[in-house]
Image 1 (cartoon, one colour):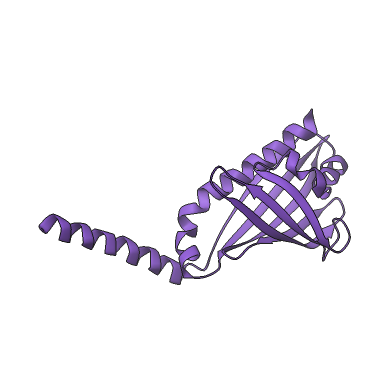
Image 2 (cartoon, rainbow, N blue to C red):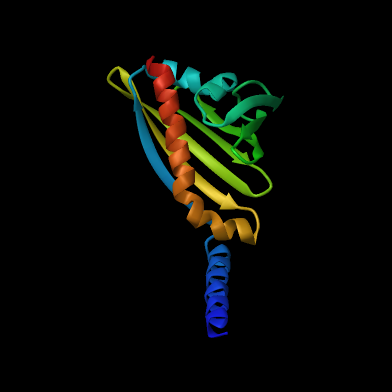
Length: 170
């Protein structure tokens, strides 16, 4: 009986901690950089062409344009991801594009919202991508788990950009 009570107390403490995190941590952010040995123009064109994104974004099956012009501010897309156990659809909106300089967009669904800013910097004959990601949970439960998911989300983002690097450098 004491073991059951102790287990219940531990579970309640964990749940309470996660809920407090969800209340007091509305967003999580991180940044990383990737160097690609190709000119800025080529890397920018590769990122702006979302129809080729399934070639370098892990788990992305297809991209469907739902509004606007291809890769222009205000353009909207649906991104269809498949995982090992479930499929997820994200909506994407291009917020800002400065040719050969930067791209800003947001990905969102009913649980999460990601604001992504990518800056392109020429480095000799190559390009450095500086990427800033801000993650928000929609609702208390997704916000509670966001700090726990941060490292896996950022690793997935790095893997995607490394996929772009491999595609560009081949």
